[in-house]
Amino acid sequence: MRSFVLKSFLFLLVLGVLAAGAFVAFPGLKYELYRKLPPKIRWNISYALTDKFVVGMVYFVERNNQLLLVRHTYQDKWSLPGGWVERNESFEESARRELREELDIKIDDFEVLEVDKVPRSGIINIAIRGRLKDKQVAIRDGEIYGYRFFDLHRLPEDVIYTHKPYIKRYLDARRPPRQLPVEEPAPPSPPERQLPSP
Image (cartoon, rainbow, N blue to C red; front, side):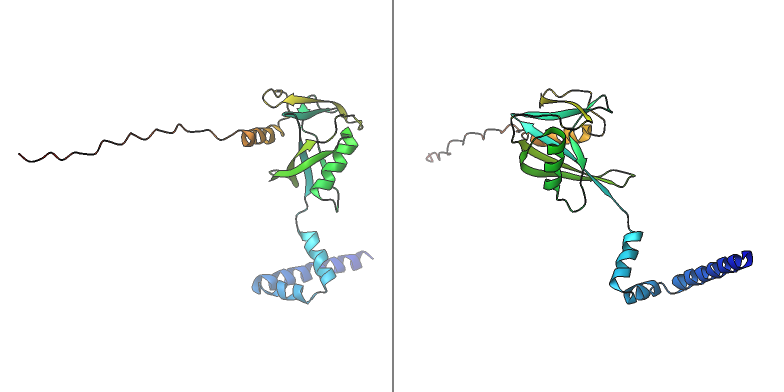
């Protein structure tokens, strides 16, 4: 039995080396072989070899020029509400579900502010803005310790570090562009008068 396993291993090793050599010697060979495979097998190969990502979302929920921040039971700092996009969900569906599950609120006027890949990770974050539709907020999720609406110009300092860049970009985008002073044009000089010759 041991010799059979050893012979099988050596056979597969030699076969792998030969296949690798053939792919190096003939670079287009792997694409030709790939094209000849049935679509389902091609899809499975592509799925197995491509990067996988998890899509997270942070929500900018506004009410009367205020921004909603939450405190989680597992963090001692403020953060934006957020959650993960589930399979077959749109961004809007995910935002509605997460905010309803966690804080029993609904938002309107959805806008995707940015899509960002977290460096050295398989996470893509999407920032979404919306206006609060409900008057009341109620904690419905055990991981939310508390919430508060902060004036946009008086946000707390103790915000988790991963959300600070999103908040900074959000506030910068809301500020009106700086108006440069406009110089008044010089008054037109009076027309020259030609004096009569003497």
